[in-house]
Length: 297
Image (cartoon, rainbow, N blue to C red; front, side, top):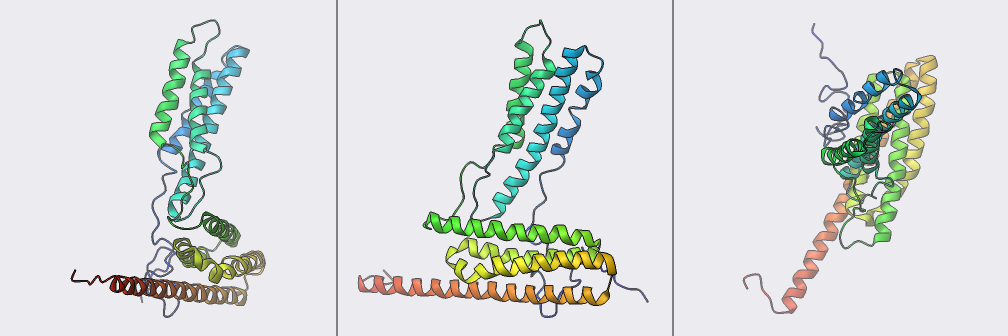
């Protein structure tokens, strides 16, 4: 009898009973990362400098190797800058990246091309042109870094900053869970953890949209995720040694409980927000009526 394939990308697989389609799906709302394609080509572009460096005299060797190093570092900073920007764009409230990585990458690209085009005793015109073109083209190709914090209008900046710090801490816990489960070497478990992470991030986005929810969600973003991280680390170490099915079943049951609780809390937060909105609308209607304004007016 034919069996249905149950890989990590199969829709509807490993979904807990009662979970609606789309809820907690790890790829829901995700976009294809821009940290590939053109960015990967940047790591290959400096290779000619490394190949010709050892055919030069000592000064030429040093210049070509310096150009190679600057361009490789620029490629790495470009990739990290794009990843930081994608994380910034995915969140409703976020701080700007502490280091403008793509801007530094543009500067290093210009510096690398300057060093690669410089020849002792010759005019600086050509290497300066190379440097300027490299800087401008890199900036145009990959864009600038986010230069300001992102939040919601009308919300206390201090409150927004508290939410940003809490979500940053929660994201670190999720990243540690991801790193730990990778050691287990089980794709189904990796997909299961990703689905829980998607459910947790639904709560993050809800809190970001209304920072007043932080008080009700703080324990979930802190204590519960910290416990989930520690449990995942311990499970990965034990599973890699014993492959005990009971240990795996207990861990999956823990994830099911966590996912249900996170989803239920998120629904509660949304319902509270809806109720608060209804109250605001009703209060506004009463004020309009006291002012003698009617809907038909």
